[in-house]
Image (cartoon, rainbow, N blue to C red; front, side, top):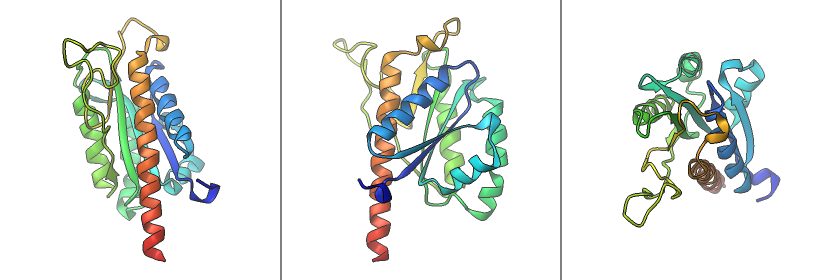
Length: 199
């Protein structure tokens, strides 16, 4: 893709202890390798300039740890602040996706991914799923499989609560990279379609 054809993918995330930041980096890396320009925004310290970058992006991938069955409080604050964009539908027709991490294998991560999905729907965005079959789902599978925890809506990752960011599982990192690449490709398709319709 030429520079003018490259989609812009923003990764808007909160990371409490660094684990979710590792996934955010992986999503960004996957999107960049698939040809997108990437912007990373830590939403607990978002600036007006970064809000403008989100407004201008073609896609926004949301990420946060799962605490007490939902996204972190810092992410919720960002989501509530985004209501100004909801009111004007500034983010309508952008691509959206999501990722989360928790200490337990399940850890109610589906609730967080569902929260992201609902938020995106309220903004009028188009949700992109993970697009990967579950790994580690047979006797021949292993925890090293892509999508080892078997999520469909987005990336669900797991890191022990007593381990640091360096312990984020390599499979979860690879799964996040795959989501970033998928978002970049789907966003490029949308951009190409809009260009064709405009012509």
